Length: 401
Image (cartoon, rainbow, N blue to C red; front, side):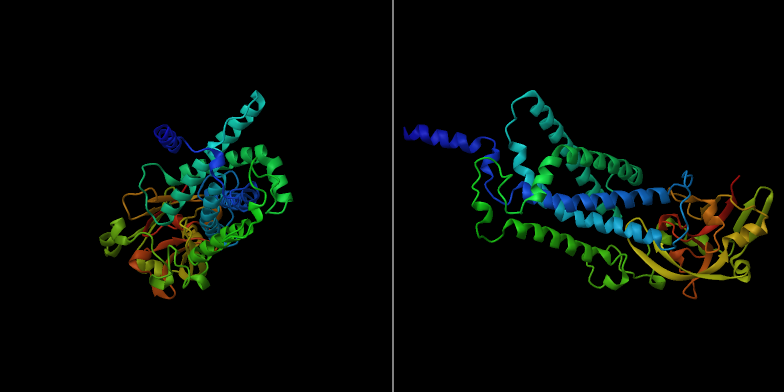
């Protein structure tokens, strides 16, 4: 008999866990709904700001991206990255609270089975997309790309999948969410059948209210630890900020001249800038550019990784150069760099940026000649434009038909 009992105990230990095996009162719909509410807000804001970032990088968008406010992209992209980081602890707590549901027995009845399959399917897609978005977003912020796909297009597509799955999940769970949010967090109304109603309010190291507050506090700490990449006042305490503000003129550097293989061509006395419109063309040395009328603007560099910094840039207005080749207004411009490889070697500058009086081919930063890593001999700097499109080491400006 003792041997049979031992075998039975061993078999019981090997069986898959069941929902009722997870006895913590913290794993409740009350906690999941509250944490999920804040997580949904983070996902919504990240999705909206991600749409703005995608829009800003589309040269032929049906609605032209605005050039004002000059700091607009800096705010939206900084918020996008910070909100994404804040979502990480919230997602972890949310997954912890609902984890036992993976082991729930299938319900009876066709209608309930269909709803259960829809719910679990939406959760699976949502969790997978959310983890992918957060993990790939963090890797992008760190400029680490251990994959072969294009980050921007894939991240954009997965954003739609994540939001679609989230909308479906909310629609399925809305009655439960409304009930959970309408009850006190320590209510046992939605606790699983057979759960101890007293356990939810029993004193302990951490109660439900404390778990929700801890999740929100962790999200707040993540924000402060990251936001210094965008908010200069927080840079000393933002230990997770991907850029500290260090660099020539206080502007960080993503890609160095050496990495772009332009050191020799940028420093060569043979360097020339060519501006072309149809049959009209003008060629300038850097000294000739410096002899033209100079304009100064305080403009930020804001990158998709979430960091940004402002500087006082001085150089020749792009519109003034275009006037020298008699280029009409409302024409897009192709800007080409000295670098010979890479997806951003040549970029298209939409007409509203080309005509804007604050768009410069900058020669100096904070009254000092551009550092080689900042784009010497000259670089593009335009208002409210992603940093990846602020072409460095410019050698050709071509007005498009």
